[in-house]
Length: 399
View 1: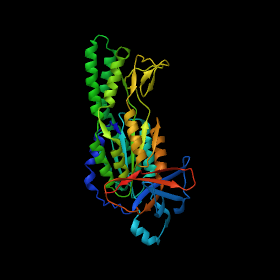
View 2 (view 1 turned 60 degrees about the vertical axis):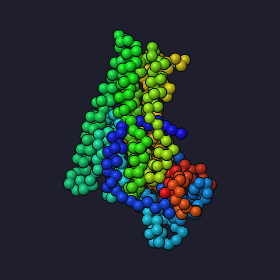
View 3 (view 1 turned 120 degrees about the horizontal axis):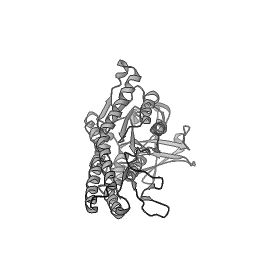
View 4 (view 1 turned 135 degrees about the horizontal axis):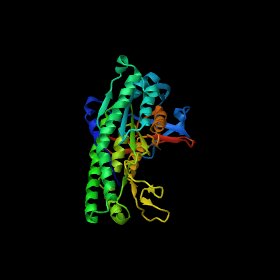
């Protein structure tokens, strides 16, 4: 199955330029699976090696070792051999690499609160951080704490993120206003309005476009990192004005064209991110500013368009075009064992995602009859006799 994908390409292009700085040889002889187990929203921290079952392609596997990790500390370990010997073989790496990615076209104060929370409650000595805005990627230097007060560092970083978002949003806002002006202009010939509308929509989707290759390059970049890797991707709901009642059929066709602008192999991309052994946490912000777009209480945004209780397209028309992006990164997050949070509050969603990511089990097993055939091996982790929510990466590529 193939799905559409839209995103500002600079996010992944910026990261791709950093890939050469990290090198890590990946062995698939001993498979490592970070596993999180929840009862409701609470992490279950009292499980043992005998509580877990791992299946690869439906076949039960022998678990060799289980480590309970809290932040960067190994709190408990159980192995089928001596602990010192097991640590040499499995070499659990608990160092943390964080990437905060802001694919947002305007700045909200809660974004700053999320950054403050990260430095006050999450970031620890030994962690690394990259912050990616729609303009640039920044490597955070931990030595900065030795030179400047933390409050000053956080303030400067928030200011840079705000500045980058402001620069990026100028063209975005201009295109949305062009669409709104076309919708309101009654004097132009309808065919000319359609032509101009199509041209603006093309520029808008080009601004957000990224293809399969860049997604795969990003997954490859992350795979080369060692330690535990956490990507927190902030994305914002986007609503655009359509032409309205007189052009309802054209608007529907235009949206279909927008959604179908580019396709990628969803299974291939999800497998690549799962193979990278990362956790992608998708934070979708439902808050929008309107950006000059006319709104009305009579209209509600739906995945198919805007309508009243009778289903008739109304005027004015506002359309949420975030659906393809949300669906795509929801699937990728789930394939990596990450989380999906949807809220108007960036700080609250970020806190939930971080809290869910900090505690986990590292489970190791040796696959039966391993063969480097390049195929994707699907993994299922279960807790015996319990109805817990278990999250983990979907599998790995045997290459």
